[in-house]
Length: 225
Length: 290
Image (cartoon, rainbow over the protein chains, first blue to last red):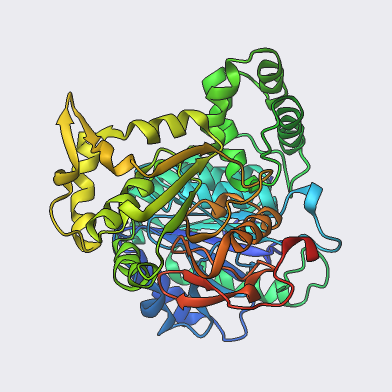
């Protein structure tokens, strides 16, 4: 499966997705700031990010990122409906995507929401990028894009592979351009992403995903209660 | 190992997962059908590794025909390893703001719902004792996992873990040293049995059982996150029924009442710490009137 890679390695207009999941560790706050600052205010794709942060203190990420972002930035709460804007995983919780089980499913479109968990650390991390990405692959299948940014561990590699395996889109920051290269390298080796590129290019790719979605009328509908 | 069954849900794995939960319910009357699918998928993959089964259907076969398999599986489905005084500011708010109000009652009933192996129970009991309230309190410590309840009742935790809780205890307004409350023996911290003198341990399911009457405080932290919205709704309605008017409900730091149809029956007491107070007279505040 190859989603729209041209021979130059540049992505063609990609298949549309319903959400973007991002993972970042060492150097990740600066990377996210750079991405967010370049997004148009009209950017309407839901995004969920795991950034490795200390487990035992309140996070300032929402304040730091929100100050520079033209879109809404908020911390994940259990059962939040997935809506446009950026949602950040809180310290010491895993964040997963979920839909209510079929038995209890309400009529209408699938209602994708966030589910928090206190389950054991994964790859020494809580929140873990793998946990978010694997749940995104399970819930959204091919309709999700996963992005692994700079970091000094291997979290995200298995999760990105899961997204790739279920037909989703994958992008990884170029290790040469990342402040910490271990996490991008592990993700590239594990998932064979469609795009490996510097941050600026990944940002353009993200904007492209949002533009593509804007013209779309079917698929998962996100609605508030 | 990761196995992916494709988009939104109805792959073989999800189907087998639902059938497994139905089988456990029908055979053992343990109801996990309202648990959040996202965490169940992860936990049951781990359970498959533990049992060495290639599918959830094979795991179902084991659980239906081998009674010894159920308690092991229950650990995957239910057990939360919690911490003592997790979110110290929450326990500080209970100590400083909630307990002085509760102290005006002649006697107290406190329900620790989903107490698992008891870390929050002992955090609460220590706080009550230090505030002079444990003698006139009854604590209901409930969980669906009987093995976890036995551990809660034993009150023995790994010493290296407990050492890590000392800082949280101090930040939560602890009046002495956490080590005042346990005895170190054989690498374990054995908590003072006097902390359990008012505790009733009980096997109880928020999915299928009823409420405890006339409680003044319900502590249910990081339990609801494992429920889907319908089961969350049921549990919160149960808490509402259980609480006296102006009684308190304490949730986990990322939990809230928004999805609950009973949200209007509560007022926010401390929004940051997720402490709610049952409204005085909310019309139609009975579950059976929904």
